[in-house]
Image (tube, rainbow, N blue to C red; front, top):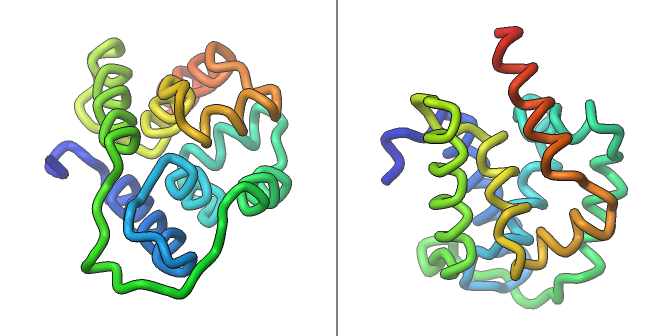
Length: 145
């Protein structure tokens, strides 16, 4: 599954596991993926949201207020929720639509927005994130590479 993921995209999942584990959650869900994006300014997804005018710190605070905490758990005991798996599927669809060859953090961000039932998508919508605006920014960034 991870073969087409960039190093940064795999790192995003590691961060998401950390976010869930420190909160005592054995399932890595969409909110953990979004929190992970806010942790690393080198993620293209972080840069996309920044270019769109969103404060990643404010987004992180918004997400942390929605997530319950608990006793930390071992990351080895964790698994992805169906919604988090769906995010990866949607990210792959974003890549296919642009004839891309890899899944980066930017594609996972677009997958998070498209997974409308997830907490991350709800938070992004409440923050005023426009999926089409993000797609345009992603395309511009890819052309600038």
